[in-house]
Each structure stands twice: as C-alpha cells, then as structure tokens.
Image (cartoon, rainbow, N blue to C red; front, side, top):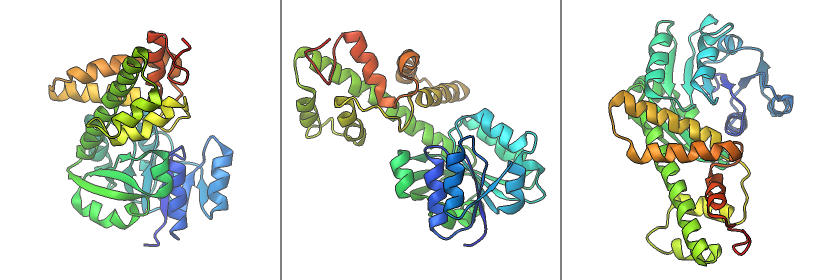
Length: 299
C-alpha cells in the first residue's frame, strides 16, 4: 500500500509509529511539531512536514492521530485549519484515548463530511511503539477497518476489531482500569512488605514465581526497586484516563468502586509525581509510609 499516510502527534508513542511507517517504504506526511528536533527526525527519515491538519488531509489517504486529550482531537478535526476543511475524504485513525461518548460524536460528525473515523487506541508503551509490537483495539465500520488493516499492521502486532464506533475505546478503558488498579496494588504490597523488613528485590523474586506474577509486575517492579521513573506512560496521563473511565462509568450507570479509589490515589500522587512514569505511584506510598524501596533502612 503506497498511498500517503498522515500522522499528527509525534510524541513518545507517535514518533516511533511514524518512523515505522516510513521504514516500511510508505510515504508519510506529519504535522509540524512544537519540538523541531522531532520534525527533523521525520524529514531525515524521508517524511514530509505540513503546517495543519487540513494540509495533511489534502495529501494523505489515511491519517493517524496520537495526542493526549479529547480537546486536542476536537481542535485538530474541527478547528481553524482542521481536517474537515480539506477537500478530500481521508480515513482518520485515532490512536488517542477518549471516553466513548466523545468518540461516537467524532464518528458521526466526520461522517457528515464523508470522512471515515476509527477509534484505534493503543497499548504497549514507547517500547511497543518502537518495535511495532503494539496492541490496537478498533471501533468503527468493519469495511473501513478491513481497508486500512495493511496500514495498521505497520505499527501494531496485535490488532483486534472490537465492534462499532466507541467499542475500541471501551476495550482500552477496561485495559487501563486494570493496569491502574494493579499498579496501586503493587505499590501497596511492596510498601507493606518492605516496611515489615523484606528486601524489595527478594519480594520481587517471590512474587514473580507465585500467583501474584503478572506482566505489569514484571514491567514495573524492577523500575520501582531501582527508582527509575523515567516516563513511559506519565502518571498525569494515567490519571487523565482514570477520569475518562469514571465518566464512562457514570454515562453507563456502571459502579466503579475500585476505580474510584484508584482515581483518588493517582490524583493525590499527581501533585508531586505528575511528569514521572505511572509507576511513581509507588513513591507516593513510600512517602506516606516513611520508607524507601531503594534503601529500606533509610526513611
């Protein structure tokens, strides 16, 4: 598939995804980025840079969006020089995380312009983006999904068509509910055991061979033990997603009792650790308990 692909949002996830598209030999045009160095990487890899979503829409048959918030997407689609002002009818592949109601609104409003829209949230972190091994959950028209699947396979290894518009987001919110609750449980469990006198490295050895073993434990425990909180998925963004989950629960009249508590914990932790990795919720627990996992004997 040699039709040109557009990409908007060259952040920690978007940049490696865009570079993987270019590595596949597919022509790509990205939107100008606030960090000129990132845009320079795209042009050095053979891509082009455009000044607005409308300008990308004039060139690209398929346009990925990978930005933090619903408001960002709203502006990119419908604002001044937004995508709807182009003279073409590209397919929008929105990899951002939103609430279901917003996604369905985007789908319907773009349909009025003849523009197809897929909600296609992703999971796997920057490492998954770099390796093109992401998980991707698709909501929208099946015919559109099948048409763009060859493009999706350039950035993701585990692609699931979930159903109609909004259901890709429903699956992503379910995923993020679990990982958020699990991170809090891991932080709380380590705090309890370390305060009792267990070495955190020893605890990890126990847990990964016991029934508490999990992908999240193995992804986050080594970083927590070594106090490596370089952001993969920033705590502030994780907290944003918890807000989306809570909103969706209210919209659907679903009780989210555990999520409500996890949301409060992340909200409190964000005051000090917003720009660190979401695993830094463990720092919040250590602060409350007066301990350090890196040096258990030092408060």
